[in-house]
Image 1 (cartoon, chains in turn green, cyan):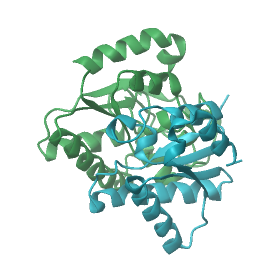
Image 2 (cartoon, one colour):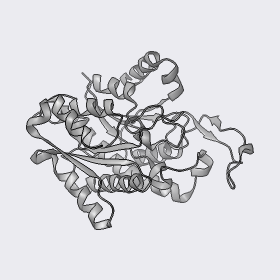
Image 3 (cartoon, rainbow over the protein chains, first blue to last red):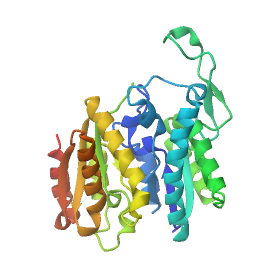
Length: 181
Length: 128
């Protein structure tokens, strides 16, 4: 069995942290967590900078809205605590990986959402949440911190919630392959 | 449709990672019971973490507890009555007290109950 510590996005253990409208499970996103437990991995829960910064009743946001010095400072502070813990596991001979949420403005690894016209008075005509091939703000700051400390390359894996929803088994097989790399 | 339960528990690391505590029962009964009951989980850091490195995690947990309680969510803390499991829960409670923040509900699972699924489930039901 792999000796691996997997740092998962906060919301996989706590769907109550999602922006309103996006919780797919009551509490734990259990198919994914059950899978990781079944593999014998140690599970660490990343902090959720969105809820810590904007609270549980926050509006839906794009990466553009979170891309501010204040939010980045919050993420940098959180990244220090996370990378401290990664160092702890690496020093004990564990491999470390991160699982983010593709599409998220903060936790996206391969995909995030942008639209510069979002902002100001809430209204319906601001246009869609446009997916772009970039990291979210939190994942950017986390990977900067781990690079800054010279940690060996930590695999950042992006999971798409809609893929999990459409075909859980297939999505978990894909995740398994990525975790083995 | 948003499926959140608006119920959150703060748990020691053991509840999610029993394999890191070989001197304690090796099962996922707490996790399974929380999953079945629809609780979201905020996990505290591993118990061997140095105090200064654990502090930011305790601080985050305290922030989330305050936010959830302010918004009317049900929040509880699970304490495991074992010498190695108490430290971070105690620190968390001290931090909340220092802030003058409301206290979440608290339940204690005894060491001898860690192998009794029905006892764990019973305790978790008392949160409501």
